[in-house]
Image 1: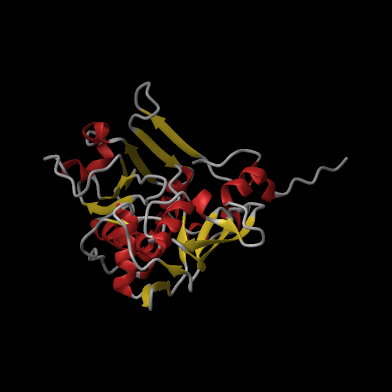
Image 2: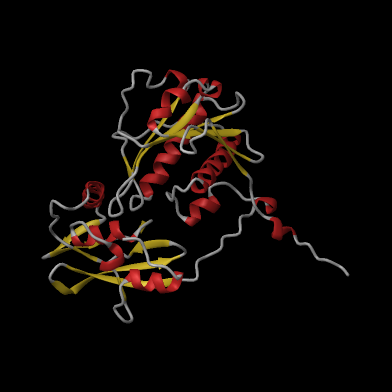
Amino acid sequence: MIIDIRSEDFVGRVVKIFITGQDPRSLRTVELDNWTGVAITGQPEFFKKALEAEVLSRSCVYLLIRSGADDDLPEIYVGESDDFSQRYTSGKFPIEFDTFLIFTSKDDNLTRAHVKWLELRLWSILRGNNGKVIVANSNTPTGSNLPRADIATMQTYLGNMIYVLEALGYDLFSIRERTAVSPAKPSDIVVMETLDVSLNLFATLPKRPDDRAFLRYAEGAYTLAAGSKINLRATDSLPSNVRKLRDQLIQDGGLVQRGDHMELTRDILFSKPSPASALVKGRSSTGYIDWARETDGVPLGVVLGIAAGAAPPD
């Protein structure tokens, strides 16, 4: 008998997580196979403990994350430091956060110029995914000019950062960014398994059933389609970060007024359906109820409950 063992059957990567102490929510050190980078992450109460790590005396790029409610968006601050062990020793942070993630290197090859380049690139990607996250930085990072060889190295580092973030459960990037940030080698190709469910959904404006917004659900992501109608007014119940997104879209032309409503001028990618429907309706919203399948009007929650064999979250 000849057994044909194909290399693609063994495609994958190893993520190692070392947890300090007994509590799995405690300080964690995360490493990825064949990568000199390292991430240190935890909740705010473990921040001072993290500063004791020897690797944080090197150049670092970091994220401070404040999670959002189901109908809101998370908020992220992106920063860099040439010696993170001396950063925030006063305890004054740019935002309140519930998680920190610090990326550095196990060797001395990551320089201040490198992390400034990474900071700007990561900030730019997250700003481009403003339906998934609100970036808290008030100013654009300065970045740095790197030689072409260093840019190629940092593209690979950034790709590994994104891989680790997604592996830890932070859905902040598009599939294109997950797979195309750094050039893939045949041995590094990640096979993406797409979800079986693909849906075209709609939601109506309050008290205006003929004015609709349209949402595409595919590969686990929700895309609010250009041309969707958006409520002209926002109520006090509109979640704070969705309100910030709305204001940003108005400022940059992503939302324009069309008589008695507003209209989306470009597609916006969301991780969850509720912030998308909140943007449409101008108020707090439960997306699994307010989005419905175009073909028969069945609510999204019912559709996904049937498809997944379980009821969707509230």
